[in-house]
Image (cartoon, rainbow, N blue to C red; front, top):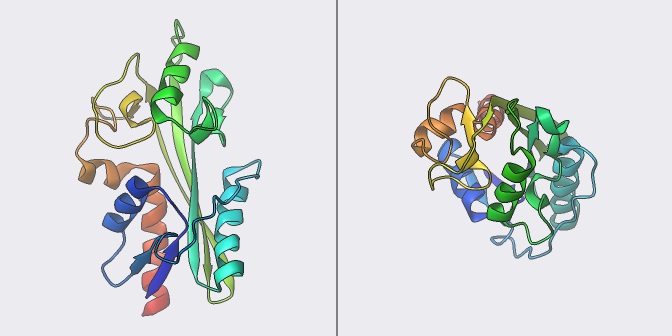
Length: 193
């Protein structure tokens, strides 16, 4: 089964490829010659995931899924949320985003947060949505160089290491994206039986 994953993010593509079963051939936007920056104009993660998947399906006529992920920090009333990727500006610098977030939490004792991923799937003329959430806390400083995005400052509940320090297999098993992709994978497995 061929499926387009609507992303230009190579880190995300690699992570998702590791999570999906081998019988699913994952194509990136680059693979289908889509070099457009699909605008994320939605006000929720769900809306953004749907916008991206629908763009690919309507423009290229292909089955597709897209995700949108946000880091929601309790002390910041759920920010950066839907703006997580461009929290510190349109350049979408993970380093700048982490610096800004740590600066805004300086002196804050309540550092609870959660990551949420929403996946929108367009398959054979029907649409489906899956999500995954992982609870945790924001550290005082960066720890680890693995993963991407906010991984070096997010410590999932029940672990002593950040996503930036955990082995990728461990992270993928417990992460928000891992949980959402597992729901997608289970759904696709049942569809192909």
